[in-house]
Length: 281
Ligand code: PDD
Image 1 (cartoon, helix red, strand yellow):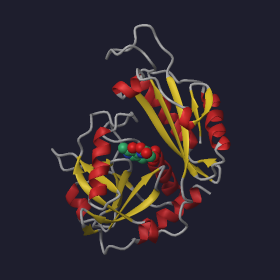
Image 2 (cartoon, helix red, strand yellow):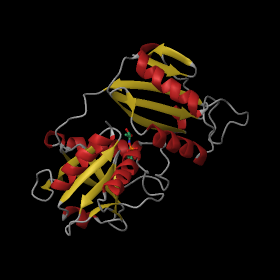
Image 3 (cartoon, protein in one colour):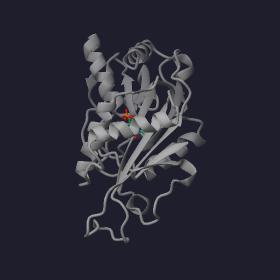
């Protein structure tokens, strides 16, 4: 495997970061994951827009102009001969003597791009369904920034795994309101049949898949409400599913050990899975 590291393409086993990289020491950086499907970068502009925004919010410059970054992403996919995979890019505040405040003499941001092959996206939704658990959301207050600080997400995903689930759906402990998955956005068809996902603010990541699916829904004339719901509403939901660059539209048929609705993939999740399959074609 070939990785891009600060201007060079290297065999991944020789690619290393400096031990004083601020991403390594402080989690002082931003990342993106882009799905490569049939050799195409899915929702690339949404991901690059979000990268720029996240960087701006933590006061980091783009490591290179957007057009150049597009070329690097393609070059990493090409050199690894990946038609179906996940591109990972990470920008950190670079290498400097350890000090919490920004380096007083600016250092160039560090850019790393890697790719890994994944199985082709399934054509059939039933085998794609998964289980999720519910957990309190222990993250910081700016979850709209895609920072590499992922410790609460890591612990939540591990807890899910240990309970035989794929995802941890997180909720605010004070209000009982569901935020999102540990690495996905969360959607339900509520007990009245209304398709819902949480509105955007600082409490969740504005998912690119979420945004693309909402646009497809509008186009198809399928109603959807961007309105928060509680854990109790999620437990009573007819259907549930998650969205992300890694899972696109993935039905959640078990939540916290209990079936969602009748426990089978519902008609709305099925329709949206098909809608998104057309979106990535
Ligand atoms: N995660 N919410 C969180 C907390 C996420 O980390 C992600 C993505 C999403 C979905 O966003 P998008 O549709 O743009 O992938 C929502 C990536 C895939 C990851 O951490 O691997």
